[in-house]
Image: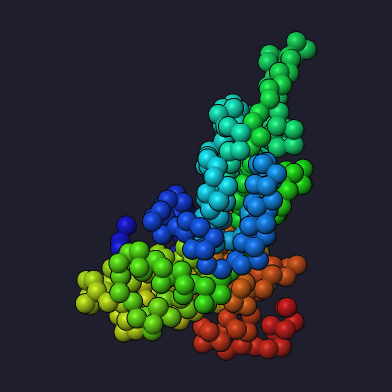
Length: 342
C-alpha cells in the first residue's frame, strides 16, 4: 500500500485498522482523551465492583468505527487488573468455538467481542445463560436421545463493541448491565490525541500543523493517528521532518483531503446524489450501485461523518444531499426543489 494512501478506513483495511499501532493506544483513563461522561461512569462502575470483590457487569460499547471502543476495553481490564481475551463476532463461527473460549476463562476475566452484531443466532443463544447465570449448555447427541449438559463457568465480564447496535437482538442487548455510546470527538480532544501520538512517534509538530490535522481528522482518533503518520511520511521525504502548516497542507492536498476532512469517496457520494439523482432522495442500494461501493461501507464508514457535518439527510424515501453539501461542492442549490424533497 502506498504510504500516502487515504487515511479513511476501506473494507480491505479493516483488519489493518484493528491492528492499529499498539504504541499509540492509551493505557489509562488519564491518557484517554475525550468521552468524559463515559469515563466518569466507568470509573464509578469499576471502583464499586472492586469494593464488592466482584467482576464488572457486562458492558456494551457502540459508536462509529475508530472512536476508541477497543482502547476502552483494554483500559477497563487494566484498571480492574483482569486478563483480557479478545475476539470478534465473525471469528466465532460455531458453538464449539464459543464454548472453547468460555471454558478457558478464569474468574474475573474479561471477554471482549468486537463487531458483536455479527454473532449468529445460535451463538447468541449460548451466550444468554453464560451472561446471566454463568452456565454453559452443551447438547450431546441428536433427536429424542439428545441430552443437555450444563457446565459452570467462571464469573467473567463480557464487553461487546459494535458499530450497528440496531442489529443486536433485543434479548442479547438487554443482558448488558450498562450501555455506552461513543460520540465523535471535539476539536480540543483530537488535538490532545495528536500531540500525544506525535510525542510517542518522536515527531516534531507545530501548533498550526497540529490544528490542521485535527480539523481534517473527521473527529475520529483512528483517522487522526493515521493522518499524522501520512503527514509525517510526507514531511520526512519532502520537507525537513517537522510538521508545520505548509507541509501539512501540501500533504493533505496530495492525499486529496479537503479542509473538512472529506476525501474523494465522500465527495463522489455527494456528487452522485446531486448529479445523477437530483440531490435525492435515493435508496442505499441505488447509491451503492451508482458509486460501486458496498452498502456496508457507505453506512459504516462514510455516511456517519456526512450526517455529522449536515451534508446528508435521511428521509423515509431515502438519502438526500443538503444545502450545505451543495455549497461545499460549489454546486447551485435549488431551494424550492430540495425543500420539497426534505
